Image (cartoon, rainbow, N blue to C red; front, side, top):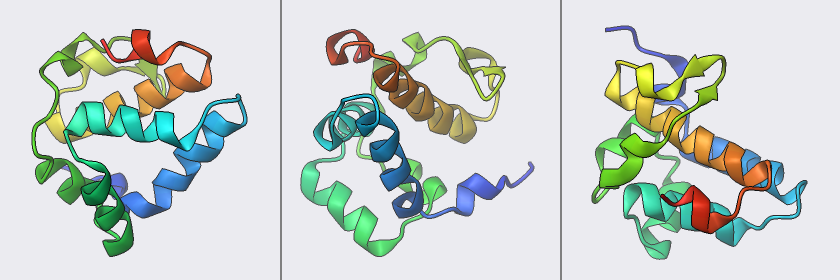
Length: 115
């Protein structure tokens, strides 16, 4: 299996980019946190601890309390690839998160994003 660079990238390096992306479009950090918590079942304290500890993406998803069972309902293209066709489960979960953040940045309501 190919080890992608994103797997070893600290979640704390990408998290502020997610926030910046949605804030440019009038959304908030709280909405980003809500999406992350929906997808992974982390609580606020756990999420802040992950950010402080520079946990990488692989560990972030591997240690998630429970991945949302409806995440497979996330469809569409991110980085030129259909998320529902990604075979590597870790990469698919990372792209699910990217897709949800993208939808928020494009103006979709949080109620529709959280399927």
